[in-house]
Amino acid sequence: MTGAARQFPLAAAASLVTAAALSGQLPVASTRDSAKAYVVGREETVPIVVSFGQLSGTGRSLLAEHGASHTPWSLGSGLTTITCTSAFMVGEIKLAAGSYSLWALPNAGGVTLIVNRRLDPAAAYDATADAGRVPLTVEPADPPVQPLSIYFRAVRKGPDTLISQYDQQVSRTSNKEHYTIGLRTGNVQLLVITWDTFRWSLPVKLQD
Image (cartoon, rainbow, N blue to C red; front, side, top):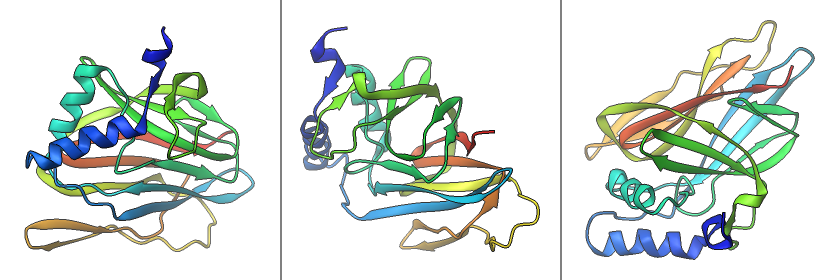
């Protein structure tokens, strides 16, 4: 693989998004948001947090551009990161405690999630810093979701935990869905990424 194929500047991604915005296909919102959940392990319960920049508009147009050019997308406006204070797993990828950037790579067979060690929002995507790649579960979002939303859903509740658990609340304002995400506790968390007409997901948990 050549250096040009390994690296995809964030500036290029920003230009791609801006061009779509100017064409009226992709209005861009720069609001930062986060999703937080608690994962229950054998000996501890720890938080896991995803930070991302919201986007509104036609997500499928942006995905088509990245799929055609075979370039990763940063899962939002700016860098998207995941942080956990204990060793954890994103899908089948085993990760040491810390923070990582998340990227999506659309392809003909579906969508691949890339976990990367680079955290500088001004740096280029560098495949040599990949911690791993894993396929996402792909489903349609019906009705379409605006703006981009990333949240956790508990798959299994942890025993003997004192962490409060709240249900996801959905309210509609001006025909847009706004998600208020409360804290959730579980042995396994499902990380859900949904925008426009797509919904992607994969499990996140502590290492055994």
